[in-house]
Amino acid sequence: MKHRYLKNVATLKLNTEKCMGCGKCLDVCPHNVFNMKNGKIEIIDKNGCMECGACAKNCPFNALEVKPGVGCAYAIIMGWLTGSEPSCDCSGDNSSGCC
Amino acid sequence: MEVEKLENKECCGNDNMDTKIKSIKVKPVVRIPNLSLPFEQQSKDKSCCCGGGDACATEPITLYDKKDNWIVGEITTAAGVVPRVSAKLSFSDTLGAWKARWGVNRMNYKINPGLYAIGNPNSESPVLVTANYKLTFDALRKELNELDAWILVLDTKGINVWCAAGKGTFGTKELISRISKTRLNKIVTHKEIILPQLGAPGVCAHDVTKNTGFKVIYGTVRAKDIKEFIQSGMKATSEMRKVNFTVYDRLVLTPIELVATFKISLIIFGMLFLLNLIAAKPFGVVDFYAYVGALMIGCVLTPVLLPWIPGKAFAWKGWLLGLVWAIGVNVLNGWTVTPSYSLVRALGYMLVLPAVSSFYAMNFTGSSTYTSFSGVLKEMRIAVPAIAISISLGVVLILLNSFGNI
Image (cartoon, rainbow over all chains, first blue to last red; front, top):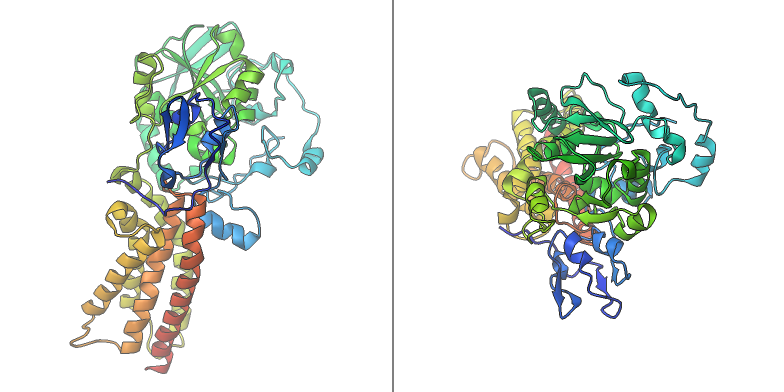
């Protein structure tokens, strides 16, 4: 059964003019958000985007933009409580600094 | 995605390191040249002090302990000795995985970063990159039976690939410096490295190529497909590129969800115990199983039944099942025919229990493979105040019943 999350929230943006059709985003996207059509990328499932940021990070032409973040309620609560950016820290600090 | 926070606390290979901390923490590194293998525990911690580059040429490629049963030998390369690992998991590997799943020694279940060999690799063999969480490393090597390959293990502080990539520790900078530290360019003659696809959020492939000359090839999502990927000439099917979240995937994540609630649950039980000293109607077995049930629904049942529960927001899904449970608890206690407690208390349960399930279910967003930051934020803007109000009102009602006997 397919998992679907909230609609119309993803911050993913594609600048088709910059896209050179290398297809790197097709390789890295874990949710089949993109499709190649006539040598250009198109977004076919924006609501499937989980904002991991892999596509934007690996696009050699800066054609993709997304605000990457952790989709984690606990991290967001901790961010609210500590006044910092939500980050994954549920596994604690192993404080094994070596230097 | 469960990950850890230590970016600014460590000195080595962090993209976002605070310059202030850096200036305080930098101190002369004492190098001990020509130290021979094997390295025992006390020298393991020095592995990350190496600044990279030529200065490291005299240091071993990988620090390892021959006594580890997953290391089955050594291979001598042009750049030095590399440990060879087994493609079979032993009982202690399986036990270690179980313990990590239940939160025992989970934050320290890691291996030394560096280069490892599997099978009998030579200078033409493929290079697979992975994280130094032992669970991750084991998941990879058990799929590499009958394959000759190099495994380049990044220092992700014992965190799995995807989470570490999100955090940046499985990242461009660490990959570039690890390639340099292991002197990979002397060990293999080709210029390709295969990364797990889920490492992509942390790695900028073209920057790695620019800095090291190595071309980054994104392999499959799952280790079980990597052999087929290599054998088919680095071709992935769209199924291999897609993240799943099967019942089993969700089930193995539930123990840690439960373990994480032990502390808060103990605090709640402690408070109820103290209240019992002064309550007119003490808290009892009904309160206990009502709470434990709500917790199990949020931490286990909602995750397992996830796609089949109507709605999209996790908090909503948990609330819905929690509501069914709250009704169940009241019916079990005689409602509405011969109720064993008052309407005030019954209403209190209806307000508290679904909200408890909802809260724990909402926290499972962090373990899921498909929730976005924007989406979780949206659901929380409604869910968090709703949960807080519902629990507060419910607690007031239950306390009124316990102390005011209404």
